[in-house]
Amino acid sequence: MADLVVNVWRGEGFETFRVPFLESQTVLDVVTWIQRHLDPTLSYRFACRVGMCGSCAMTVNGVPRWTCRTHVSKVAKDGRLEIRPLRNMPVIKDLAVDMAGFFDKWQEAGGRFVPTRPGVLEFARVDPENPERRQASAGIECIGCGVCYSACDVVAANPDYLGPAALNRAWTLVNDARDGDRIGHLAAVADDAGCHACHSQGSCARHCPNHLNPTGAIAGLKREVFRALLKGDL
Amino acid sequence: MAGLGDCPAQNPLPPRERVAPKAPGEGARKDPGTPLTLPRSAWAPPSPGAGEGKTRRLELRLFLAQRLSAMVLAPLVLLHLGVILYAVRGGLSAAEILGRTKGSVLWGGLYGLFVLATAAHGSIGLRAILREWTRRPHLADTAALLFAATALVLGFRAVLVLT
Amino acid sequence: MRAAAHRNHPAWWAFLAHRLSGLALALFLPAHFLVLATAVEEASFDAFVAWTDRPLVKLAEAVLVGLLALHMAGGLRLLALEFLPWSDTQKTRIALAFGAGFAAVLLTLLMARP
Image (cartoon, rainbow over all chains, first blue to last red; front, side, top):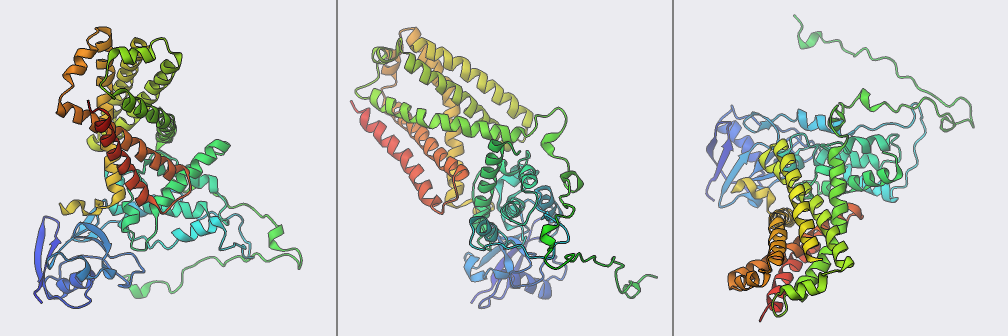
């Protein structure tokens, strides 16, 4: 098997590396191999290597992916890989991006759980099968990798837009029976850069490595904001 | 010199207060306690739409106007498509169209509503496209208002001529 | 080219079709109003219709009708997406919207046959 030809973004352009092709190799393996054998100055970020931590996402052949769970054999085109940092976030160096703004928006979207009462030691009894809980459960497996945010063209056009991950988080709280500030969450996402900026392009849901559906979550927020407005709660 | 080894072994966290039920049978659930609903201002930055001189939640209002006008337009467009397909049979003629619409309050009313809804829908859509593709919000606002004015004037003129 | 690879899926193409058809319709609208009213006022409507009786103009007219149908069907899909509970049939709905557009083009061409 011929070597892989890997073009890696180095800040001012691409640098081409040749990496031996191995069976069951992931894109993260390729990047690590380059750093260990060819250029120790290559910067990138990873931690768990098993799809839990959400730190190794990069743009691979034009598509944002979690590199630790992406097999080279699945994405390489004619033995070529083009690896760039995630889109829509400032690049720190090479493949490492600054995710601070991305996570700040989780706060702006009201993504913080608001307890109803402090000091209650009893468990809240929540039926896992009720419709609201199912909506919340569908969205809570987000690992915060930034793939959806990087795939979103609305974020690219409007850097203030809260983005799919933060709005998905808000949607899980709106559906959480234990949360004490449902209207506060809706008010946060009804702002000018909130859920109504979404064009339902669906790239977030298309590329989410955990198969979450932020497009559906954002549509749900639009619906609940509308309902709250009709009721005069907002 | 403060190295890693000089770090205090433990953070001086205050001891966690545990609030236990006061008496058996009088569970914590019955004690509402102090609600810990922090005001938004305590943790969220001020809303970008809530600034002075700006219409509050302008984007939300435009979103709703866009959807409302779409709901009005959908049946009207369906009607219009039907009229087009009916009218083009054997070619268009002024006499045929005017014969249908002249003096008709119904056609005038429906197409008047059509003009209103398209002016709103088109201008909001144009504004959104220009904001994203030119990144010049003021240009987008001006163009949208111009479009709305043009569509309203020309549209009502056409409705008046035909009915 | 690869910069846009993340966009190659039905919902994104549906978005682009909705945006471009909307833009085309918005630009056509003032011209439509103007020509219609002017032609009727100056009693030159039938002369204008005679001018439009050439294959390319007829095709352009049919395409405009198709864009209107496409934009309406796509708009109904978006209203359902935003105001009704989520459905996993989005791809089917997108296909239906494109189908409505093509059907309108064909119908217009068929009906307008002399």
